[in-house]
Image (cartoon, rainbow, N blue to C red; front, side, top):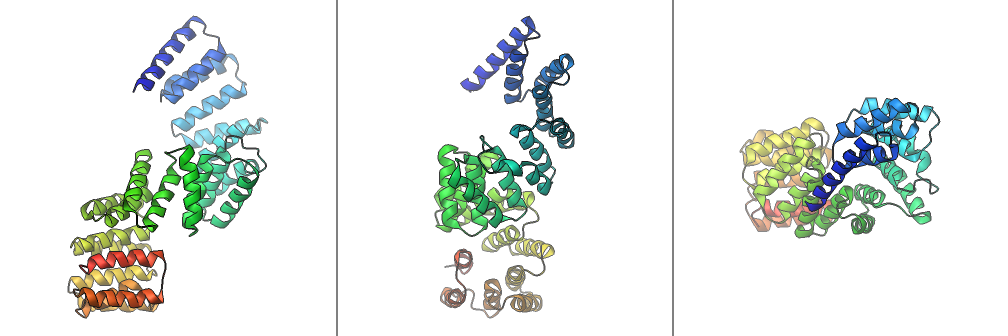
Length: 380
């Protein structure tokens, strides 16, 4: 609070000085930076417009004006302004980065990546911003191997930013490389404890280690940075489930599917949390939502079969089990649904024996997580 008060006091002093010396453009630049940092976008924009009336072709002031468009989320206008700067021959990495960010914010990932690609290698990106943004583009495009390979090359030859390490750590999670994710997230968080992607990666690694406390702490910090990040809400839901806080898990998953409605796995996790809480009709709706997104994912059919079996809708449950087994003969949820229909799901010993048989056929952290969830569903 004191720091914020000091920043506002500094802004007031700069305004007073600018009134006394209105054509001091260095002073105006300081005033612009301070106003922008405090979210006073109109005041910052006024400085740029005033400077450009006096010197219409000044590149740095044209760039500052374009930055205010980014701050106002006027991304197409910002894109046009930054493209005009590039067309005028300005090859500043900051201009290229901001153009790429305007494209990224419009979901133009290929174009954004191409805009900064020349700056991601050879030490031409001293701030590390271009590499981090390029990696975010590769992540969104699903180019995990290509993005991580480029990051590793750059990290071997040059210092890389905490942002770049953080993005790479989350890419490593999605590439099923937990140890690399662990290492990179720790490096990023040592330098920047609030780096969003690193927090999500760190929390996900903690979940794989079955450490609910560190996972909860990481996802809560991530949501403090971005309360609309569906992936963080989903991670928080899983951590709450692991900690045995079923009500909080359900609420977190509910928030996750609100922000990330197209993610099949989150709908399924939400559904399982509802099954565990006895809200089976709501669970059925969640599993059906997952199926609307992808009718070929076997665990959605198997999970829906569990809900239907618990609701006594035997014929529909049998059909969903059949579909799930056709898609994946060893699917875990379909086996559990079968156990419900056969009347053994309330016998912890029989269910655990069933799960152990499945586990010997298919291993991995995903199945271990599913097994923990189904242990709870079996009442064990």
